[in-house]
Length: 322
Image (cartoon, rainbow, N blue to C red; front, side, top):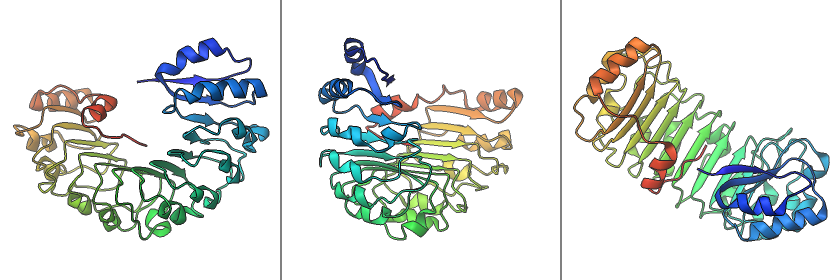
């Protein structure tokens, strides 16, 4: 796993060059000099896979004028650039941009200027809904999509992304879970604190799904996953409504499940019994809210914990997004 490289003036070019080799992101929150922008841009040309992120409260940065020095950046984030009001200056970036993170800002933005990019492979959008349908329509090659704080099926009643493999929905709402079946190519699905989502049955019809992440949902029982023949890893975190001894029985029916992580404070130990002797389960960690109950669950399964997210993703050529 790489590091976050924070850039501040005065920029030490030698040190920055050394740190870029294992960087996950290069970011700055205060303006640099023109010479420093040039230096950072020149270094990033040799590291096209490293995203550039600009964030903070600086009004000058929020104009995005500095992008004239970064025409070759292919991965760019404005997450938490609070005073950003207009995305039009993104036209200073190359048409070959493949990842954009239009994250948190003080007010929701119009995404229409972003639709000029037609080769996006990864996109994160937080709360901005104007122009989102047009943006997705312009990028049918998207593979990874993360949507935050959006009423998803209202903003996007129809979604046609034939190559999408990873989808993360966080802090928004999904009234009709059948919406998910429009994306049968999904291999990774994260549903985190999604309101109005009570029926996960349509998820079992996603035949390509390998990694399922459920977090803080109001569902009280998981459906029958016996048809999910590709499902390899499942995570159920903060699931306070899972209370019944049979709450996980449907998940235990997944025929190829290999890794399991459950954190459900009201779940009885008996709910773990369906996984005892599961023919493919290799790793599991069960957290039930007390050391005593956790030990009882561990005694039932006697399995090592799941692999770290990054390791599992690399092993199965999956993308983990939030």
